[in-house]
Each structure stands twice: as C-alpha cells, then as structure tokens.
Length: 507
Ligand code: HEM
Picture 1 (cartoon, protein in one colour):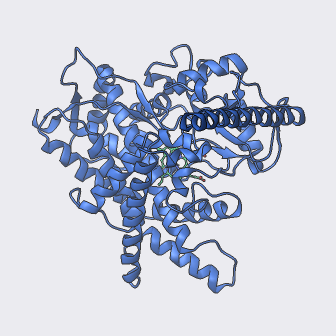
Picture 2 (cartoon, protein in one colour):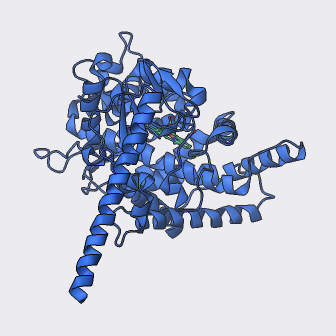
Picture 3 (cartoon, rainbow, N blue to C red):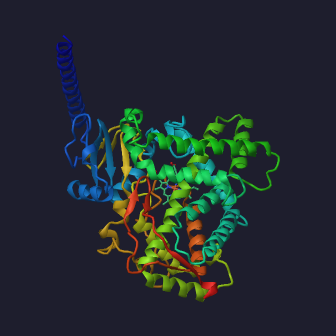
C-alpha cells in the first residue's frame, strides 16, 4: 500500500516537475522571442538555456571568457542570467557612445543583493538611481573638493597615514610579508580621516574589524552575483553562494559605522576639524532651511559612507599591491623609479603633491599599473531607463548593462601588441612628460564615473612615491616569482604574495 502511494507520489511529482519545466521553457522562449522580435538585441555568444540562461557558460576566468565572446560577437553582446537579459558593452567607442553620449538614459543601477541583505536597497551614492544619485554625487563631490582646496586637507591627511604606513613597513625589518592587510588598513584609515575627521590606530579593534569585514566581503562578492538573479539561492542550506558571510560582513560594517556616526553627532558643536559627516549635515540643514526638497537624510548618509569605504578601500589598496607585484617581476623598473626619486627628491624630503610633475617616470608606472591591473574590470553594472539604440541594436528599458572597461584597457588596437605586458614607457611622451590618453578609463566614463578619482590619484601618488623613496622591494625567492593571476570578483585582486621591504635608509 505504502509503496503504491510512493509510486503514485513519485509519478505525480515527476509529472508536476516535468510540466513545470516545460511551462518554464515555453515561458522563457516566448519572452525571449518576444523581446527579440520587439528589439534588435545584441547577439548571444552562447545559446541561453531555459530557466538558467547562460549560467553554465560562465567560467572562472571571466576576463578571458569575455575577450573570446567579444571576438565572436563584436563590442556588444547579450547574456542571460536565468531569464534576465544582461548586455555587455566593450570597446572604447561603444562604451563612450553608451555611457557618455547616451548617459542620460544609461546611468541607473539595478537592485543587488549586497545592499538588500542589509536593508539598504537602492539608497546611498553607488547603487541609487535618478535624482537621488545625482544629489548624493554632487554633494559628495563638493565636499571632497572643499577638502582638497586651500591648504589641501585631503593631501595632508593622506600624508599622515602614509607616514604611519611606511614606518610599519620599516618595522618589519625586511622579514618576508604579505602587505595586503597592512595596505587595506591604511587606505581605509584615509577614508576614516575624511569621513570622521580622524585616523584610527592600526590596532584599534573597531577599525580592524571594519577593514576585515570589507576584505571578507570583497573576497566573497563573486558568489553573490548569482544571488542577484536567483534570489532563492540565499535560502539554500549551507553557504555555497556566500550569502550568509556577505550579510554578516556588510552588517558588521553597517553597525560599526552607525555607531561612529552617532558618536560624531554628539560632538556636533566641534566643526573645526572638518569631516564628511559635518559637511553633509550642514548641506542637509541649509537645504531644509531654504525649504528645498532634498534626499539628504540619515539613511542616505549611512549608506553613502558604507559605499565610500567599500569603493575607496579595495580599489586603491589593490592598485598599490599590484604595483609592487609588477615591480618585483620587472626589477629594471624599480631601478629607474629609484634613480628618478633620488635625483629629484633625495631621501630627506618626503614627497608632496607638488612633486608629482618632477616624477614623470613614477607617474607612468602608476598609470601602467592601473591599465594592466584593471582593478574594476567590469565597472559597476548600469541599468537602462529607456530603450536605447546603439549601432543596429536596441537595448530594452530596464536592462542591466556591464561596461567592460577591461576590453579597453587591454585592447591591442589602443596599446599595441604588448598590451598584456607591463611597460610603463608606453605612458611617456618624447619630451618626458606623462601621456594623457582618452582611452585610459580605469575610473570609467560618463554620468557614473568614479567620484573618488581625484582622491585615488592623490593616494596612489603619495603612497607609492613614499614607499619607493624609503624601500627597495625584493622577492624572497627571485627564482620563483609570485603569480600575476588575479582573483576577480567586483575587483581584480592580486593573489597573496610575500615580499621583503629593504630599508634604503639603512643600506
Ligand atoms: C584606484 C582606485 C579606484 C578605481 C580604479 C575606481 C574605479 C571605479 C569605477 C570603475 C567605478 C564605477 C563607475 C561606473 O559605474 O561607471 C567607481 C565608482 C565609484 N567609486 Fe571609485 N575607484 C577608485 C577609487 C575610489 C575612491 C578612493 C573612492 C572614494 C573616496 C571611490 C568612490 C566611488 C564611488 C562612491 C563610486 C560610485 C559612483 C556612482 O555610482 O555614481 N572610488 N569607481
């Protein structure tokens, strides 16, 4: 009797599952055909399957996969995550057309799990759309500009942290070390000094905890990409897609920042130090007093600060760590950097922003690092607000669009046949100055271009010039150099490696 019921159940379950899959397939094909009929969609490099789309075509090495797909389909192609259409736009002219010329309708953001998991869906500077994102961008840019004006508080705060960082490296006394963690702690401390007006000690548990949570999030962000399209994955037992670890890491960052912001609120009378929170509140009050409609509220303040930490730490820290890695693999480059620094500054004078023009070779090294490392290879995903025509294609309203910056930064048509090699000379003009090239777009282009670009450039110059002035970086085992293979999530992070920082003052 029981076995009869089981058999019947099995039969019914199988029938139900088959019918569901069949209906799913029909729905997917109908949707797909309908979209294709209404819009001339960019080609798919691989056949999307019902329900799953191209999920099984995605490979670990996304960079090489997208390169192959561009070769096959041209600058623009379509892929499906489940039944969701995602368009990838590569090549400089297509990226410029899509995000600059058509930027008014391609600058929104789709909702993503990493914000939703902390209950902050589409607010804050980096993941909001429309007038909200415009107001937060212009407010943040104004505040950062105010910090960078006059005696340049921004550069001064970066220099303070650089000093501390360089001394930490000197304390290692040449012991082989992985500098990733140190570098993250220092770079996130620079953001701290802007946000709250003071730096933390490197040993401060709250600061360590926030930095570790951010690194943890970055390491696991790849898993969450699937959850954006298949939200049910977050509820599966275990944590294969890293939903729980991401939720915990982002929750940690949020809780710590909320506490810090409320502490700052209590010191509201002391505005002499200058920090992002005071400036934001001042602008909020001014608008409210003038009876202007504003999105500047506390929730947007908290989320914007989380975004600034998230966007400003991993990117700058990874670029620094990439630069040192390229140098280990190209020792001749380090010799030239040292010659330039010794000739222009010597050992006594610590570098300031005013020295940038005197150090063009270092400038070229930094640009070449940004180009080759391409630390945000696929930018942040945009979303179309209306149907967008590009070339012969029509991309429907509400489509997620990925700007493939990597395809531009590594394009041999722009950089030559050695585009995959580290060659700083390509950024030096005949007169010795640093080459400015329109196609150099590590910060993206258009309406959502990185708001931290100016600050990041200052950080990279001040950190790297001081590091090379003080140290010679050597590999503990020159016959077995570290791998140049990146780990690509939202950012392209170098695989862990060790190096020795030899103090040039003690040589
Ligand atoms: C080497 C360092 C950096 C690189 C390569 C970089 C690159 C990028 C890229 C590619 C985007 C996406 C642009 C788009 O959607 O089209 C972005 C956005 C953003 N970046 Fe950066 N970034 C860097 C440093 C920073 C720093 C230091 C900060 C903060 C102080 C920052 C804050 C932001 C913010 C808030 C956004 C979102 C802007 C928006 O959505 O409107 N970034 N960045």
